[in-house]
Length: 248
Image (cartoon, rainbow, N blue to C red; front, side):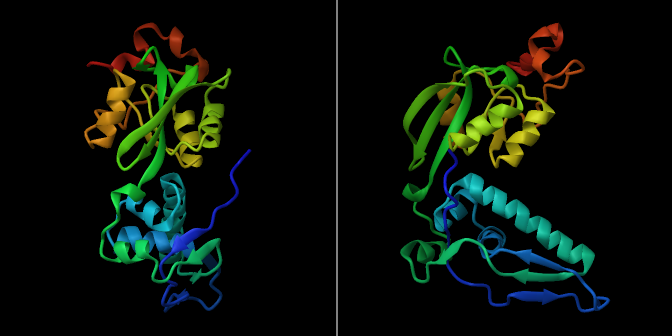
């Protein structure tokens, strides 16, 4: 069952709620940006925060911030290219005012203990499993204060490919570390707001520690691309095995 849509915490309302192109044709359409989308632009692009710090300030998960930020950037691009009207209003938020977390973020300081997240790794016998679409188990890690505070191995119960993105989203996963992965699965994960780190190899626990320390060895361009007969045939590719990149 999906979680209810949580109110996002914003520190201040925008100083201006409407922007109009100076040389429009007088019949410009209107683009509406929510207040919480605006807040991600303010915190990340104006204040220089990371998405994790923005998530801590807004009291939401990093996947939520990633989705809000992506939508906000698209709307800004449309406003500039289409010479339209940009309105900033509405949404699901609370104004925190002088809340202590907002005071910290205004100074560029977010307490590390405020950073919480849930991370998953494609898992088999302690290792990063190399075929995302055939993953039978994920190891899911709860992260707080930059450390693993708990983990569990979860069976996918036969879910595969695109369905795995929904499976992870329902488990509140925000970050995925995996080996080979197809383009369709990448798109499904992006739509679910899950940040992807493909091309990882080796001991699953060690890869998570590397991620937390900022030195995860992964390849963002890793794609299981040999799917002429569908993504389900990764194991049949012989020398074109999806995990062929490991160790090379």
